[in-house]
Length: 169
Image (cartoon, rainbow, N blue to C red; front, side, top):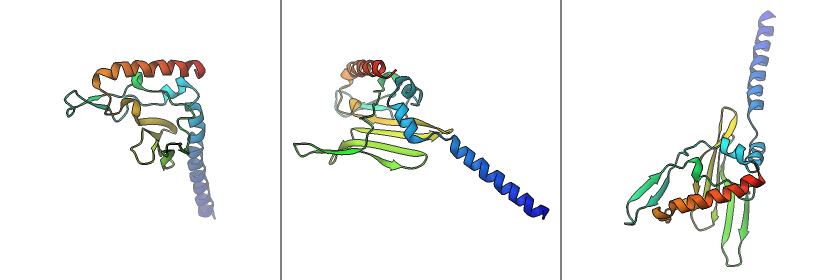
């Protein structure tokens, strides 16, 4: 009888400990709502530098140069940008935005035209019970951007970020 009671207590303790760890994990939808409506929260949940650098072609058109994807180059993402949907435009193109990978601890959001490479890819990972962006491809910094225009592009992104920060501190 004591053995059965001990096994029951151990099973109950195990179930409570695993349920407690799941409850401690931040819900993705709650995270995403905060992420898209608070600049300070968003900056705190992006792991800089991101895993993938920004890769641009040099003037010769063949040689690649990499730049770390740091906080100063991050374009703040709003609710509309990270909204799933399918929009068919008058010209016939279809813009699709969706979570292409949607696992409990890993998610990838892709957005772009149907027959093209995504113009935005954001990778979210659950680490220590909290969601973080760990990687991103953003069309602001596509391979066609001339290296000598990088600084100007970063300034433009920062100006747009200021507008976001004023609206969503």
